[in-house]
Image 1: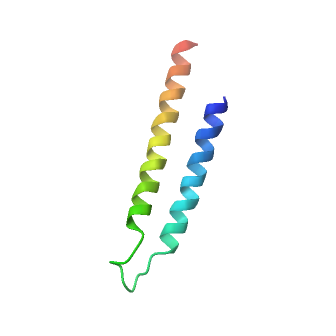
Image 2: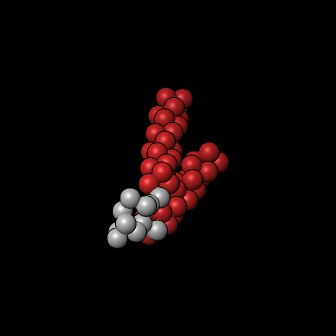
Amino acid sequence: MKNKKLIYLVIIIGFALLILNISELDFENIKKGPFAGIISDIFLILAMIVTLRDLNKNEKETN
């Protein structure tokens, strides 16, 4: 159960960082932007979702 809470916390932090990076985008000069931060946040969120799904699947198999 602690693992799930940690995963949810990381997902929430990832969304907060994603919103922060999107808010820092300069639409006047789109070439100068935090694209690496946005992409890494998306990958972090996706990785945590996959990890959570795998954890749930393993729990169902053991029960």
